[in-house]
Image (cartoon, rainbow, N blue to C red; front, side, top):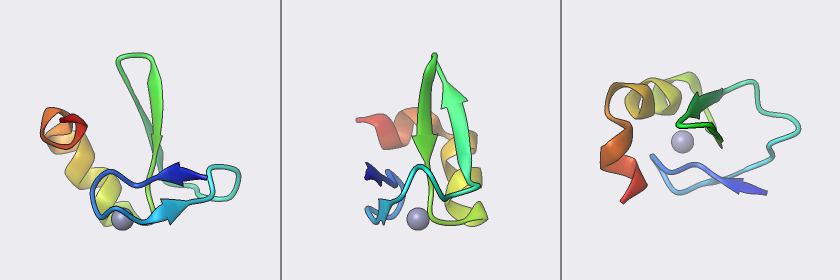
Amino acid sequence: MAKDLVCGMEVDEKKTPYKTEYERETYYFCCQACKEKFEKNPEKYLK
Ligand SMILES: [Zn+2]
């Protein structure tokens, strides 16, 4: 399982369609809203 860094939920990386790449890492999200929040300000969530 991967962790959604925006809301803290566990996400099944094989099933979720919500993912994004940032600095050659792939991050997974539970929903479109979390993905968009991360993409707007990735540094905020990577700390
Ligand atoms: Zn989420």
